[in-house]
View 1 (spheres, rainbow, N blue to C red):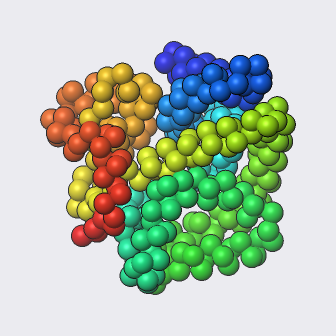
View 2 (view 1 turned 60 degrees about the vertical axis):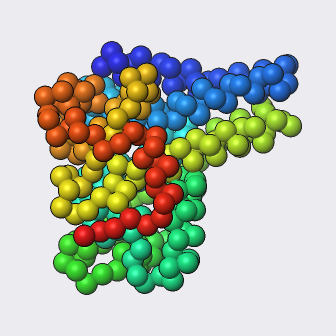
Length: 299
């Protein structure tokens, strides 16, 4: 909890700098204040990592406060907390199933179009899709259910169960109300920020794109080119010690899938006692770039 509170304080400070202090500094000092973009982008996995801990109920022990803080962090990142939570828990339950393989060509789409879509997904497309997702909560519920059912259509028994769960989520009225509320809060927050930046608004937009690019690259990284018979269908990676708290040990992703109820701070000690975990696949950042090789395989 102390580690989470310390990182939460750093991330909240970064949010306040980005939304309030930085636009004032740009107006005062001009281009000499552009260096602040670097720490804001570098803190992207920490911001997401705190949301991730909230999703698993490990950010703080009080359930209501855990969710409230996770939701606030998601609003500050223009992310739909309810959709993130549902999608991430489904990812744990059905890792690398048909709907959870962005790096695998499904055979139904022309390979050229599929390759363009894959690289767009890596290059910030995932984040842009997450930004647009709350708009579905404003559409008639029957439309959304049909859209989700069509997107996940399959005759495989497990795929049909996944489809049923997603359709149920899409039609849940309570969640739809929360997603609409959170989206409107995010829009109000970002409109205020763009107003403060004034003529410097492209700096804010580019910084958010770079943060979204990081999220898009990191999302499927531990599962890229992972076969169905690999342990937990995920991999661990090596990361320099200075990066581990920034990544919140996301490089030990296979261990997280094996022990999803453990907090992120417990994973390094577990890795030291797990011989297989020490045989990390590769460096974390090298593995992120390796995704640009193209489609992986599923066997």
